[in-house]
Each structure stands twice: as C-alpha cells, then as structure tokens.
Length: 337
Image: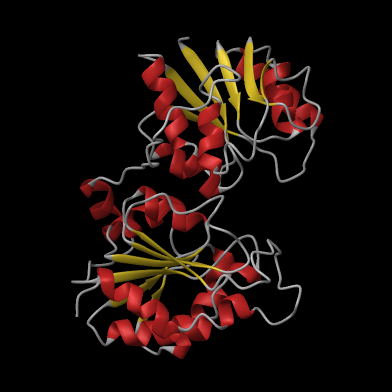
C-alpha cells in the first residue's frame, strides 16, 4: 500500500485518539502517503500529526447528506489514486464518498448496514475493546485479529518556533507559571464544572503565583467571561480569540491544564501536559485522557455517568458537589507552592 486516506471523525478528541492508528499504518507500510478527509474544525490537529501528509476539507455539517457535493468530492478523491481508505466514523454517510470514489479497499466497522460500502469489515466487540483508541487501532489489523498492545499514547507536535510565533501573533508573553483552564464542553452543560468552582480555583492558584489562561471556542466565551468576572484581574479569556492551532501552541506552554471532558483535554494529553480532568455525566472508561500525567476526578455518584447533555435530575450533583478544594489538592501535585 502506497497511498491511503483517513475519513476522520467530526470531534477533535476522537481525531486525537486516532493518531496511534495513523502511526501503526505508517509503521506497517514504510513510505506510506497518508491523507485525511476531515471537517475544517478538526483539520488543525491533523496538521500537527507527523503521519498526515495532507488534509482534504470535508464540507458537510452534522447529518448533512448533500448528494451532489458528495459526488463532486468523490471525483476529487478518485484522482488521488488511493489504494485504501480507513473510515473511522460508523455512519452510512461517512462511507458513501469513498465508495463513490472507487477506492479499492474500504476499511471500517460494519455499522449502519454498510455492507456494500465497506469491503474490509471489522465487527466491533465492545467488551474486548472498551476504549475508543483501541477500536481505532483495530482497523490497522486484519479483521478478527486484535490490535497490538500496549497501544501508544496519541501525540501531536508544537515546536518552539510554533509557540513563539503564536505568542507574537496574540501579543502574549509566557508567564513564569501558567495554568490553562478549559471550561467548555461541546457536548453539553452536563459535562461542565461550575463557573463559580473554576473561579475559586483560579483565586487559589493565583495566590500561588500562577497566571490563568482560559481556552475554548467562541461558544465558550461567555462561560469563560463569567469565570473571569468572578475572579477579577486573574484570568486571561482566550476563548474564541485563538485558532485551534494557536490553542495547541499555548496549551503546549501550560504548566498544568484543568479541564472538563472535552476535545481540548485530549489535545493537552497529546501534548503531554499535566492534566486534572473533571468528569460528571461522562465516563473515563471510554475516552479518558491518554497520558501518564493525568489525574481524573469523578465523584462516581449512583446517577452518573448518565451520558446526557443536561442533567436529567436537574441538580448536576456530579459536578456541583465536586468542590474546588478537592481539585486544588490534585493541582498541587503538579504545581509546587
């Protein structure tokens, strides 16, 4: 195999967890030219993976069919001369374009009756492969053969030159010690630690000489601004003020990252930053931060994980009762007084 294509997931964290698969494919096929088809909001993390040569824009929103656009994209891919494609999402639509493009080997899990579209089919055993990263790694092997273990942690890169350029572009200077907060969660509010708790933690860490930078998308700006107002003068709200690539570079500078279960949590893990990860409605049993330097905090209440976007009981105890003092104790493991 000389040329292969990845159909990437639509979530940043999922795409990060696919990187060990890319490394495995390149190891199995020396000199492999590996491209990715990905939504534009995911592309920046793919550009930070050494295995990916080029990223092709996937112009489709969530659930969008757009048959004419898919046909035009298929013609573009057909000209790429790919020997194989690895379809990471399990939806029917994600397998349609590779099939229309006539790529000979179309690898993926069976899912959504894709029997004609996926011709190298893997059957998913959720008990044997509980982690998403394991499921992605399965696709590198012959169907029926388990993935090789141990599975390496995902890795993305940020060079010193990248980091310095981003500091200049954003008119920032690196504080002596900086703690990154990632207070958003794209999935929904049931994964977000309360702003008042983040603000209390900000005040406690600032008392130890730490600068606090807040990261997230434009959707997270209001949440981050509330934290900044509750901890006056202590936080720099960068939510929506950076590109994803710039956020990668700034997170690479962080001495510690405190985050909800979110895409930026996986970015920080792939940058090998110390992490304190806060879990409420979701579970670290499927998509944990893959790092030896990650502390996972969960109250493990009887009602969690519920995997809901909003608390079905209306109290969000799984996060409201996770007090800042407990989180601070974990932060002190990584931040000396």
